[in-house]
Image 1 (cartoon, rainbow, N blue to C red):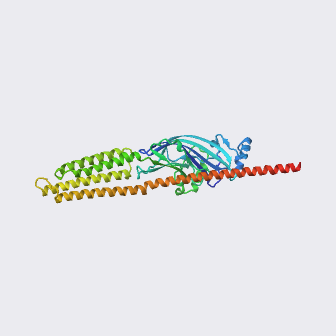
Image 2: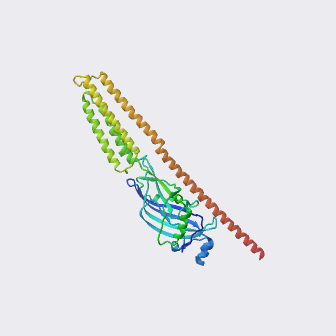
Image 3: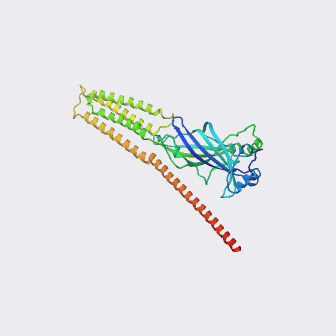
Length: 410
């Protein structure tokens, strides 16, 4: 018989630590991770003490933690599961209990170690200068009127940066974000559960629209090492586009050769784009590298159009396709070169400003959050040290008073 908590919702405090983050698969939008989840909730002292041996009762009263063997088979637990897991996870679950010195209540803690693949929606608008969120969403099979998941206010979630596998391709930030939300869900019904009657009563008290589950999402952040894509993406596209301006150096009587150069560079640029896109998932929007590549392709198209126009003008205005240096046709061609090159420079100037104000600024904000996170951790450590020091001083003061009273009596 499962021991259920009271009628009101049970608050479950959750802490997650990313022990190891493996390969991040951008193409398939998934990543590997090894994580530890600690979830704890308050239990009734009278009921709980009555079901454990006297030895464990003594250890518990003395402030020590006790291990609970096969606790989930006989007693109530929040029935947590991972919402964004892909396939079957490798799990190890243990239970323990301890009295919290802050509120002097008994907490049962579920220690769950998981390892496997997790799905994550990757936002690639700023690729290759993008920052991705790697999250694990924890939820319960109970509705929100039975279980509510919140982040543990005293034991913060974290990530082990030393065990990060993809350090050559990504930079892992130190801070962790948590988000609490509610989702509309269906009812889990198991034939072997003995508490189905209680769940059925629970469902009758809830309207269909009110059937929600509490979800806690713990997220770490990674920034892509974009040097590879800058040199092998942006730089090569830039060089291909710059070569197109060299076609203006050919004399106007060889305008057909100009068209050949422009069309060859256009086909080269399109082929290069297809090669780059193989490393990205099929998405419905353009990435930053896509926008840059397409605008450079349009630049090549404008050059080809202009060479076609000037070719028609030469054909109409000259008898033998020979254009003198001081001819008005030559001045128009030079003006077109200046216009296209100025447009090209303005476009790159706007791109540089945008890089500084959006992707690079976002990375600085992440670094500032890392600094704030380290400051909070240091403050917490200092506070704990002060509290432990005060406790020691109180114990020493108490022992000294006891010795003085005892010596006076003697």
